Length: 284
Ligand SMILES: C[S@@+](CC[C@H](N)C(=O)[O-])C[C@H]1O[C@@H](n2cnc3c(N)ncnc32)[C@H](O)[C@@H]1O
Image 1 (tube, helix red, strand yellow):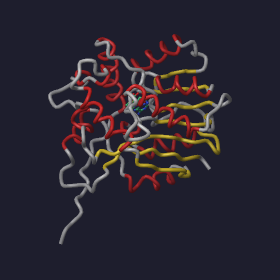
Image 2: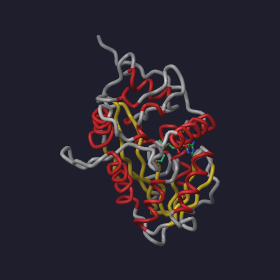
Image 3: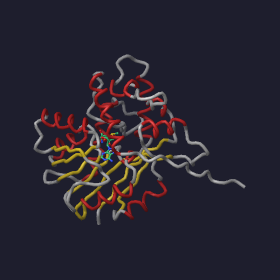
Image 4: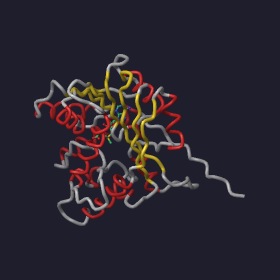
């Protein structure tokens, strides 16, 4: 008789420590000339798309914009806003006002500077804060986005419940999350393990996602496996660009030099089990 492997317990990320990690990543990227306003993977619409990694990163933000339903009268909350690249793109493309929060003070300082340089500091506001406990009133946002940040938050249920609370009825949340595509084995893939340990992240349980949304008060609009368009292709592009000198500096492995067993992007190259989800839900 065979038994399904039991999921191994995942150490939970601690928001303050995640903030310090992103402080260091941000400073390192700036010191190395490797700064990139997007801190996320790319999205390629088709396997034969020849978009660069930078173009594909912007394209992933556009996938969010297409689904957020935001316009010039909207106020959008960006949970885990990084250094503000996606938020500034939402402002530029929709005219919406965006408030971004991050647990990294260094990222907030940088995002404020980029907003001022783009002359949109009145429409793009960034503040240090924890998505687990949002410092905002009920029903104060028309849409919420969480681009590659859920994996660092220790309790997805609490974050989604908070997101639902601050959304107006009918308001949407769009997010990406990471999950294991293949049935769990006794030991998870070493690349996934390194990702979780090195970047203080946990993998979502896709089987539980619909229930998670419902328990948070949200109505599911769509849930999509976008691994082929995102994580797998990003891995392929990194493998290709590692061979040439002018590879995108922000993705350079030297940006992850924190410990002996630090995560390197190449740890996930070709790891089919490392999945990426796109989730769209709304407050009823
Ligand atoms: C991979 S980066 C993505 C940044 C940004 N969304 C982007 O796409 O460029 C993850 C972000 O999540 C933020 N984050 C992680 N845990 C958080 C928490 N509990 N509350 C708020 N932000 C958090 C990090 O500080 C970082 O800005």
